[in-house]
Length: 363
Ligand code: FNR
Image (cartoon, rainbow, N blue to C red; front, top):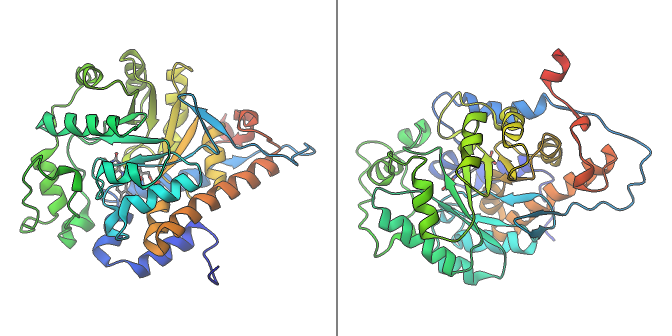
């Protein structure tokens, strides 16, 4: 064991900052425009206070939960984030092994630097696939089919990205994104022209289909039998529509505050979505989760599970596969302590009455 291992996610972030070139760190860490939502994603968690119950026998804590019938050791899922080779030469293969060793579901990004097939064969695990819909639908459909035939169990359609948000650090740095192995042979990529700022933004503008709409859920259902989650819902209106469209789940997400600045902090939008969905399908949340107590708060407000993006990426950048694994383990460990100290022996015992939000204090 190395000496002086980080003891929390923030320390991993510091290590990652030291380890990475500025362009890569800024890409991972940054948000859109004023980064108001980026700060709020984290700050909104700090305004939720826990209401612990004491004198409960907490000698056994069971963090396990289920999603789509799969049992997970804890409600923590690895969010889809693109370009892991920016952080480590093994890229998503290392992240996949880290997640698998913690029994955590990993969602592989459509913008993965490693090929779907290579990630699938890197280790045995339950994995989901995230989808962007390109103007050239054939590219997206092909990758969906490849993921399905590699044994991926669910599809997360990202719905908050009809075009890329303005990430000013990337524009300033003339960000160059690692080539996605998955697109080889599917499309030609001219990815080194940075004359207009971020190459990622230019590439996104050329590829992402801004006409994507509700009717395309039917198209997606016609090309896959994987259950479909919508990732990027933050209003009751869209949550109800998602249920009507027959999706398998809803993910309250603002893309880690990288898309629409001044979108609500996800933990602040969660309850509205949970109420609108009314138990019809599971609701997940991501954005700003840096502590086990954050996971606890999300579950108390009705999330079935959470996804973490940057923390795992920082772990990968700092210490490779071992770092990514350590980040997931630390969050699991923190959640276990939070549950014990709140008097909850299982995730089913975490209730709304274990938290107090700003809204509760005003009432
Ligand atoms: C992302 N996210 C993302 N989402 C997605 O649907 N497809 C993608 O390819 C990416 N890529 C990506 C790269 C990086 C560097 C980040 C930080 C995020 C968003 C991601 O899935 C998730 O919503 C957020 O990361 C959650 O917020 P936290 O945990 O990073 O605060």
